[in-house]
Image 1: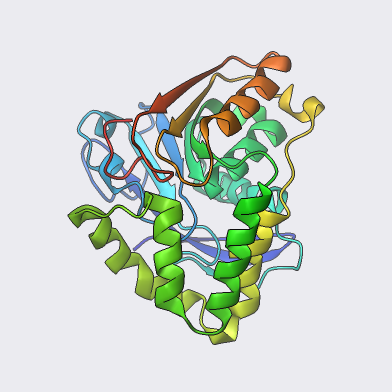
Image 2: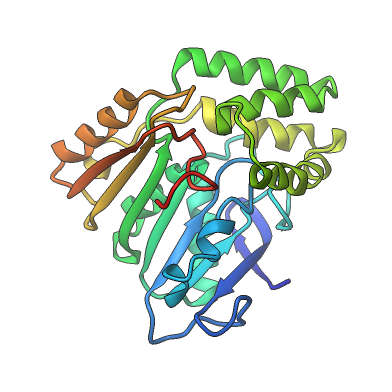
Length: 278
């Protein structure tokens, strides 16, 4: 498994990452003659893009993904009390620099959407396009924050299976399939190890504070985006309805961003894993 070490203002991180090229599923470097698609995964599921990395159409390009801090196999110093989208974006910019990636097409889901968007306003020349699924780029909705509070309170008591059930409603609208179950079986023990009782502070910062304290990008920041943006919403999401995505799209439109939107009927919040070709 390849790793690369970076240092930022919030500490040292040894990022685990994957590069897939047309010739090699686990390449050591990108093919410099092909575009690069950089994937930003969702909360708790560092392997959420398995279907995309198996797609023969997408495998015509360089596909790059990584495990965020306190996810998957990435190793990290602890993080400061304030670790939000700006700090996470700083980490990923350092990762991009260390791998010497050229300007990329960004694909992001859920938690990854806020980080990808942050990079687009901090370093717009690095982003050729933004494909954002199930964004969380606006402030948290009060009733969703209440649900996150319940799940956090359960987790710190050790009720991991109850928390997993709650997140199955958030992620897949409580609908499972063989491939979704395989994803759970792979991710659950890794998450429990990363967010063990010794690391409940990091769990709070990543799973709760990151989401509940987030703020939308100010208008001036959105105006810096120079690439086209595609927003995709899951029509069967039980946490965010279509108006949440429409509101974000209008914010982008108001600042002159080239943005469009599509809703995938019956798809859950984590819509890219086993629901259609998106």
